[in-house]
Length: 373
Image (cartoon, rainbow, N blue to C red; front, side):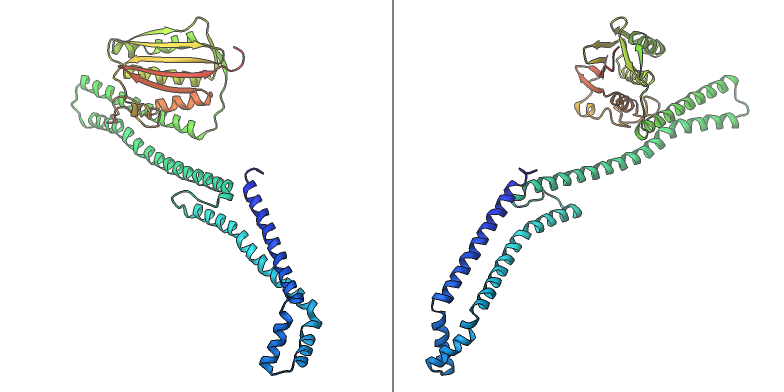
């Protein structure tokens, strides 16, 4: 802090010294002029010429008016000189406060551009500009939060409307068609059930992302065998894998353990594997790898699919962002799966990234090792 204001402190000190010396020199000149200079001659001459007085009468009047009260005149002169110099000094000194006040006004008015102060106030200038940038960032974040809230409403209405409309439509057909065949009735009921389950999945996803965003979640750590966790996960995906004739490889050292919130970490792996299945070419292999070192465990989910452009990779973990911009509710999720995965990984103080090139998509998750495994 001392070094921050060293320049202004030195300038104030030098200006004070200069002002004090100027006052002393000016008073000394004034004192010498009055006592030893031509002041008395000028006054006596003034009386002689203006009032037509004789020299002795003028001298006597000078002594009565000035000479006998010389100490009072000197004190008065000193006071006036010091007042004028002090006034000039204050005007110069308060210039700094005026500049700072203008800088604060620019924060209130949200003026565009940097705040510029005198070079001596560089430290304050940096702090004000830092506050300015912080306020601008907070305003931007608030606007983005408001936009995300609006997006939530729009996307909720869009993604829920399609399956809900289908359910209502098929149930209406079942109610109105009296002569419907049993086969067609079974078909309509099956479609309605599928759409209702889709609707339930979407609602659960919205509740899930809201819970992760708004709640202060405490992780419940426990140890789990990675091989068993991932084997169970891939087993549950068997029907989905078979629908596209996909295979998988699991590259995990036997008995590798991880300490984490098991339920939440299962959600991460579930979302990553679901994403890999959805965007994989048919008749390809999904590779799941876990590597442990001294500080963390690194997971990789690799699948073969269309290369994702860089601009989409940068947004892939945003809420409601989907690679298929059509947002068809018949395929894919609500654009929340990867956002939820990112939330969970970061709750574990970890990091999740995505890469895509040459028709290979890789998701990498790094989780720090907690405690002794």
